[in-house]
Image (cartoon, rainbow over all chains, first blue to last red; front, side):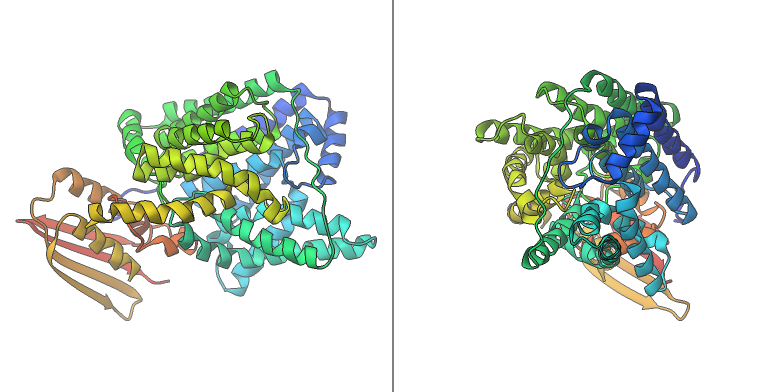
Length: 418
Length: 107
């Protein structure tokens, strides 16, 4: 049998995402003035970027949205220049990085890391296209670039040079580090590059501490734009659903197959079911919005970034039936703990816990609930490990949880396999 | 080896016996993996799914990231990682005899 299923249309997904990111920018200009947006963008690129830096709080609603749109378009241009054939993994990469452009990433702190990935590819005489995923996900350590560029000494030129060099070094080593860390998570933690970045962040923080460099956390968390941002994020979810309904074929049967899948890496829904995956992504996004609603959390940069992350993995492993058990587990864990449901770490944990959805998809509902409980109690503790330098904090927490419980579930299921 | 691991994992999962594996590397950088085995009453549903997944396009660009996951424990029929790493696959199933021939061009 020949490989008969091919990428149906190379340009269409690019156009769909370009339309979405232009919508981000247009929405920003509708709700805010150009002057505010200009000043806000300046505040964003000169802010710390450590967890949790809500760009909507730092730059204002317009600048936050415009920054998201600019970062999204920037990624699309680089992917297109490298002739990347979009699949579930790359769609996920574009959307998750754009999601984090609402709290911690901008073109300036991402670029050195991307340059490092490019140099790694060239040193290996390889195409950069093969490293787009790990390189762009490595930008979870973007805050490191700022910390060094602005805070190490009083010599601005030296700081900037050091910041760029460290960013390039992160991009250079991440492909190798991420590939190895993948094995330890066994495909059950969808945020596996976040796990690798977390490990690297711990090492970087240790080096900074040894040199006497400390970076106080200065969290920003907007609460005042709820109604407008609800409209925005729901419209984004509906955009994906409408694309899926219009362009998807055999949506009902494909969705049933998606719902039965474990979601374990590599379960690429776009590759297997084409535009039906957009429908799945939109539904997973709406689940995220529903969680925000029931816990009465604010819609702001970080929570919108979390919903975009959920949408992004609607192309690669997440669906309603493997996400719901881990969310229920996280809700139970948060309710039984001493932590407040209104704390940013808990709110984000309740959304990002879906990174370990494959546990529920593979081992069942109760396993997912247990994993969710463990995830929420672990995630509030891990930020201190890397000092907020790794934006994919839940990737590190999820990786730790998976490393502890997946081998246990695997041991119980060995009989099934044999 | 990892591709072989994944393919025979599928066969074992469906109760195969008498498995015979041959791996051939020719001078045109083409690896050909041939697996012959006996699987009693493999259901049409499982066979169709196996065929569909293995007919998906190779995703060479993703190999760098995901190859470490292949050959891992597998509780489903999710051979998508294998499909992402091979260029072509021929599958024959007749009278409980299964033959799988997977082709991978090394680049």
